[in-house]
Amino acid sequence: MTKTAKGTPPRIAVVTNCTATGTMLPSPGLEGKDLEVGSSLDQVLEVWKTSIDQALLSDEFRTTPLELYRGISFHKIISTMDALKGLHCKPDLFVVSEGFGLIKSDKVIASYDIHIGSGDDPSSLANIITGEPFKPHRWWEGLNFILNGTTKPLKAMIASNEYALIILALTGRFIDLVSTDLNDLNLHEMRKVRMVGPSTRSALGGAVGRIVRRGNTLPYDRRLKQIYVGNRNDFPQRCALHFVKEILPLVGLDASIEQHVESVQQAMNAIGTLDRIGSIGEEISAKKLREVLLPLKDSNPTLSVEEALEKLRAQGIVVSEVRLGILWSNDVADSEEALKAFNDVTELHRVGSTGTLNPDVVQALKVLIKTLRAHNPQVTLTAKSISVWALQYYKLMGTTCPSELSSAKKVSGVLRRVGDVLGFLPIEKTNQFSTTNYRIALED
Image 1 (cartoon, rainbow, N blue to C red):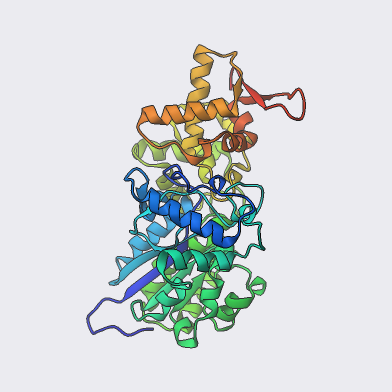
Image 2: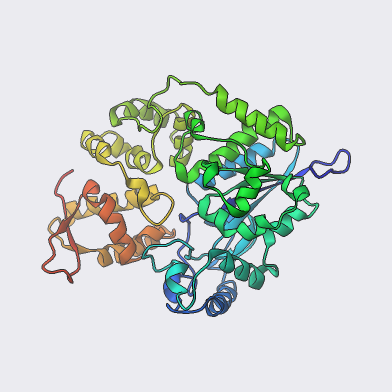
């Protein structure tokens, strides 16, 4: 590790990826749908830079990564940073952002909606940059050059003497995004890196393969789920949290990569079959959860869903953030009908291109259902009308409408997955070109 002056706390960098769940609607011009399909990489970069400059002129759209990003994976990274503060070091958090490059957690940015994923999402760069073959690492290099003045900011940060240890907690597509940075690291620079998250070493090639072959990937595997419960999307962040809370206090910040690897391997080997509620990969039943949930809520009335999720997972209780959110309010937790609906929900975490469905979205849709049942139970709804209602509802509430409800297309995606559970029943289309309408179930 890089040496520091005697008595000076070492500086530690944690690098994680951005999340699809955020607190603000995208700034004007900073959505994929605002960009012209068929453009070249250079054309999109030019328009994107102009839109960023314009958005940053308004306080309405200015924010920071700490204020913008949400979701359980980001929550775990915040917990990781809190744990580092107790280890006599100076930690800094960096985010690999598909819209702003490598950014420090306190850097002023603007809200946006763009990503490098595939599929038919209009915010996917792969669907916009079709005037030439789209390559994620080229977008990364070009984006960082126009915004940060360098094509390889992660390489530059690691190569500097500023940080003694760098923890990389990135999911697969973000590792691909920064692959050219990693590929340029020399042996001395690589020894400062601890990569957590790649769960299948044999599947890693290229730049990441070099790191694996040189022993920089900490050997976390699926056994971690027995003590740090989660899913594949937050695996790197769970690894980072375990490494900081369980490994670094034992062997120290200045231990060698070999010592860190050995300590993680020993920790994985020591994990036995724990007698916990809910086995690995099997979510707790609604009835069992209710027995745990109600006393927890009674004793912690101000607890947020994310905080409750952490407490439950610390007990080894396997439950997704969205499923917990559906039962978290008092009226739902006390409803036997809701418990039945809860047991029917198995894939709510798949809403959107990445990340989890914000529990606030479920709560808002429940408010709409309850209001309509009381005042206009025969109403016919469209995804557009629900989106318009949501924007007005959150405006009246004095807060930002969740991205999942900000457009008709996104509302349609939500309703395809959870509509029937919440009470939005699709009306059969008259033909393949007609809009899907919905009626509300008169009772749960």
